[in-house]
Image (cartoon, rainbow, N blue to C red; front, side):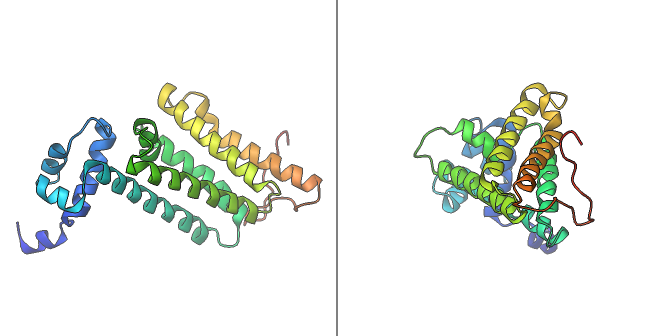
Length: 217
């Protein structure tokens, strides 16, 4: 291998995480061992254990990488739609759909939550923190958009996404999950409509000045 190729090659830790994430998605967290991960990553078990104390620690590190990547999504919303929290909220609906439907193997975090049920597993803290942070970030966005019951809307959208993801995995993209965007936008519109009736917020508009559609409109 040339010096240039060697220099551009990911470091062992990053290479192990990347390889492990791919294998975990293909075979499950229980279905692949450290020997297979080390071999596929072009390293050995000694190097793997030097970076990660155990396979469980490696799993937790892989899920932490997922959480870090998810943070970039929020930054994209803010940069693409500055000062437009309602537009960002609808962008979240679209991005959630694309992410969930884009891979038939599902979400790494959701898969781990189902497969790794031991309460003392190091991945459980990562899963729970990720879910709380994502929901709280969504609630703050709803609040910034002027939704009076921001926490309730965030919970509703979170549950809709979890249910839609299960529908996509169980019956495919032609099942009830196919209407996730339509249903989510209708729920957002209902919350906005209720807030308008109570005088809590003006009509929801996008950055283009267009009113978002209300149910039955």
